[in-house]
Length: 555
Image (cartoon, rainbow, N blue to C red; front, top):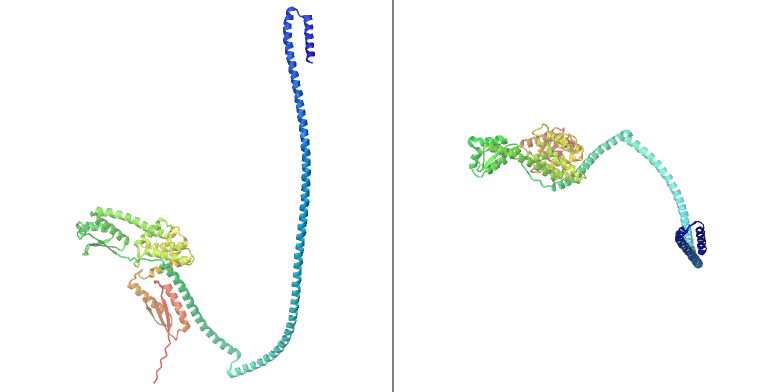
C-alpha cells in the first residue's frame, strides 16, 4: 500500500516538471521533491506503525476479554456447585433440627400430660375427701338444728313462765308502792324529788373530791415535768454572783500619793471629781482612796483614770482632763467588746446599736444583780428549755439575751424597761416574736408565743436564785403585808399568816361558813389573785385549813 502511494506521488511530480518548469526550477523542484517524498514516507511509516499498534492492542484486549469470560464462567460454575452443596447441607441440617424439635416437643407434651394426670388424680382425691367431710358436717348440722329446735321450745316455755312471774312481780310492786305511800305519807313524785336531791348533793361532794384529786394529780405531774425541764436547764449553766457596789477602793503605793491626788489647794481632786462626775473620799484608810458614785460607768471611768495617774505620776488638772477623755474612749471600746462577746457566746448576729447597749448592761445592776450576767443566764436557760420543748433555741436565746436591753437607757428615757426595750428592738427590725417576749416578760402586754412564757419563767428563775438578788427590808415587809391583806379580804377567813419568809400563805377559815369543798375553790381563788396583784420571786404556797373543834366537859 505504501509503495502504491509513493508511485502515485512520483508520477504527479514528474508530470508537473515536464509541463511547467525550466532547468533551474527543475533542480529546485528535485530538492523539494526529495524532502517532500522523505516526509511523506516518514508520515506513512508512522501511520503504518500506529495501525499495527492498534491492531496488536485490540488483539490483546480481545484475548484478555476472552480469558476473563472463561474465568468468569469457571467461577460461576464453581459457585453454582458450591451453592448447591451448601443448600443441600442446610436442607439436611434443617430436617435434622426439625426432627429433634419434634422429638423434644413430643417428650415435653408427654411429660406435661403425665403431670396433668397426676394433678387430676390428686384433685379427685381431695374432692372425694371434701365430699366425705361435708357429709359428716351436714350430719352434725342436722343434729345441732334438731338440738336448737328443742332448746327453742324450752326457751319459749321459760319465757311464758317469766312473763307470768313478771306479771306477779308487777302486782306485788304496785302493792308495795301503795303500802309505802300509805306509811310514808309521800306520793311517788315527791319521793323521787327527795331522792334526786340526795343524789345531787352526794354527786356534788363526789365531784368536788374528784376535781380536787384530778387537780392535785395534774399539778403534781406538771410540776414534776416542769421541774425536770428547769433543773436540766439550770444544771447546764453555772452563774457567777456579781453584786452591785456604790463605792470602789483604789489602792495607793504610799500615803504621800494622797497629797498629790488632792493637789495644791485641792485643784487636782476637784478637777478629777468634775471630769468624772464622782466623789473621791480621801480619809484615814491607809494606802487607799475611795470613789463613791451610784453610776457604775462613771465610777469605772474614775477608777481607771486614777490608776493611770498613779502609775504615770504626773497629776495636774490638764493631765486629768486628757486622761479622762482617753479613758472614756477606751471604756467605749471595752463596752463594745463586752457586747460582742455576749452575742458571740450564743452565735447571735446583732446590729451595732444593740451590741453597744448590751455591753452597757455590764455596768448596770438590778437589786444588786448584774444585768448582763442576768441576761446571759436567762438566755442560756431559755435556749435549753426551748430545745427540751421542741421550740426554736435561737429565738429563745435572742429574746432572753435582749429582754432587759431597756435597762441600759431607762434612766434616760421615760417608761418601763420592758416597753423601752421592746421599742428599741422594734426600731432595729427585730423579730416580732422576740419583741413581744421582751415587752411581755413583766406581763405589761399579752404574750403571743411560748417563747415569751419561757423568757418570763427564766427571768423569774434567775432573779429568785439564792444569792442572785438582795431586797430591802421595807420591800420584804410590804410583800408580807400584801399577802395577809389578800388572804383576809375573802369571806369566811378567820385569820391568815405569811410564813417562811413570804414563801407560804397559811389561811384559817371558819368551818361554819366555808365547806370542805369550798376550801378547794378558796385556795384556787387566792392563788389566782396573788398571781395577778403581786410581784415576787419563785412561787408562793397557799394552804387553806378548815378545822372543826368540839369541846365538852365531863362532870
